[in-house]
Length: 112
Image (cartoon, rainbow, N blue to C red; front, side, top):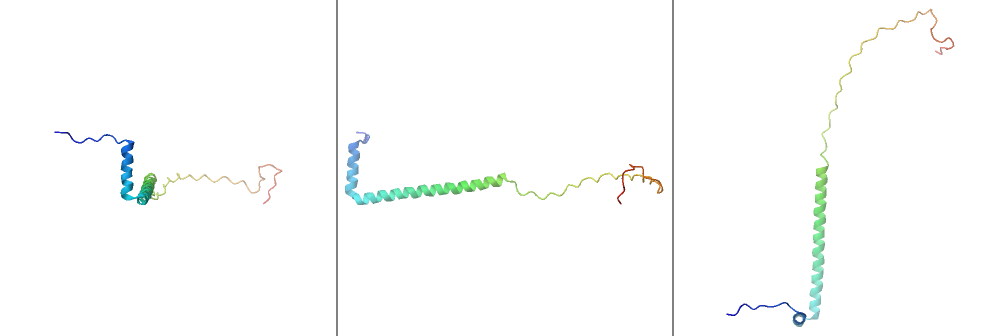
């Protein structure tokens, strides 16, 4: 029994024959229109993929920023500081006698 039909690699002559047959079947006008439609479809597909990637990147960036920024912290209540210890009242200073002269510099004048 013979084995399956094996087809070898396509050479330039075989490719030219295939292109010639396609041109005869569809015509030159239709092939150029199909090529233009194919090119515009590829452009549209690439643009859609790029837009989806940008949207996903923006969503991931927004999510990452939300994770990095902590939530608004609850307002902290002011820390009450311990009151300073009560100071002991100093004994009143002895007032100089009213009839005595001040003990400061004699050249100083009292303005009041």
